Figure (tube, rainbow, N blue to C red):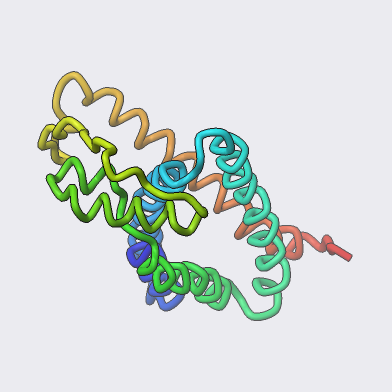
Length: 195
């Protein structure tokens, strides 16, 4: 979140086009790290019976966010320019970064790293908040995860898949955010109104 919002905020102060492109790419790198973490930890804490429904709700917020982004672009860009839009867009992420300090660590992550007591304490807390009790005799066993690095994504057999996924996600993000950020100002330049 800090990478996403921090570079998003810095991009509002870009001195030139090259800096803007670099800062927006770093913002996208932060978004790319945030999405799977949020989705996974949200799913980990949801009861199995309601997991599908709430994950769909989470995904639906992207559509709502897209509408808000388009609305903000429509209101802000023609009147005061793109810099204030980028600055305002970074603020919710900074707020979420602050709130995230209160989200407990993933119990599975803790187990994989041999921190069973911490995982057990978090599971007790989650059970308590849901009006349940964690059985004391419950076995928490997760096989240790292999040590991997980002560099492993660029080794066989993952090289081609990694390159294609990065290219696809870059294109999707560029198109998605590009359209919703710049389209309203392009319409206004061509004499169209939204009223």
